[in-house]
Amino acid sequence: MAGVVVTALGGALGALSRLPVGRSEKAWDAFRRAPLTFPLAGYVIGALVAAPFLLTGAPVTAITGIGVPIPTAAVLYLAIVYLVTGISHADGLADVADGAAIHGTADDRLRVMADSQTGAAGTLAVSLAVVTLGLGAFSLAGAGPALSFAVALCAEVSAKTGMATLVCFGSSAHEGLGSQLVSSSDWRSFVPVLSAAAPVLLLAPISGGPALLAALLAGPAVAVVLLFWSAQRLGGVSGDVLGATNELGRIVSIHAGVVAWTLF
Image 1 (cartoon, rainbow, N blue to C red):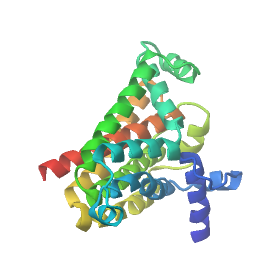
Image 2: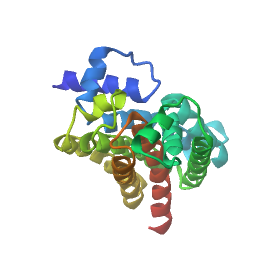
Image 3: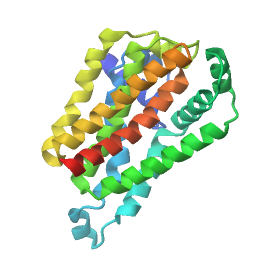
Image 4: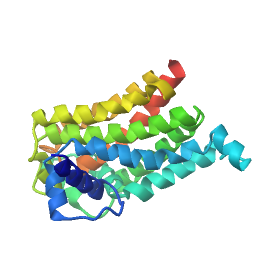
């Protein structure tokens, strides 16, 4: 069983990131049958993208004599997010935005989303996403290295849990990579997903429970909204919707963590 999970995790990292884990049909098949590897991949990706926030801490300052400024940490976070995860999910967000801007049938929206050209709505959506994520990262960096690292890591786990939510509860809009994931799981697969995501809350003693809890719940909440939207507007979940869920889940998770830290 452990070997299957390791193989599936390799497939998850190969599909969800640009990490040099190797990509094979066996790993992909194992991944699409094991949605719990979505949040497991989030831990790996999250630890990498959250690392710049640790550079603002006192230990780094004591060793090097200089700490990384908060704006620099936020910029490094943004850069590493897209270096590690690539732009395929952002492209999914752009396609969903273009589809959402169309007044027509589900087939009309899917046809626009399949077009390789990005429209004005897609360009605006991606631009706003990057700016909003950057502003969230800037605010988060001011919370201190422990909390900012934990929330940024949690945001990746949360975003991937949101993707798994669609895989477990959604139906496929059309044939494609997204349908291979959605058609391989059902609601019963969501219990292992929750079991894989919940341990991130163990970081609460060093970073603050309310911020982590808010961040963790944000990704699935975004997924539920997109699940209902895609069912009504597209006839089901597509690969683009999965990508949009990842991007929006990360943004909302970062901001939810910042708001919870500010209030509580």
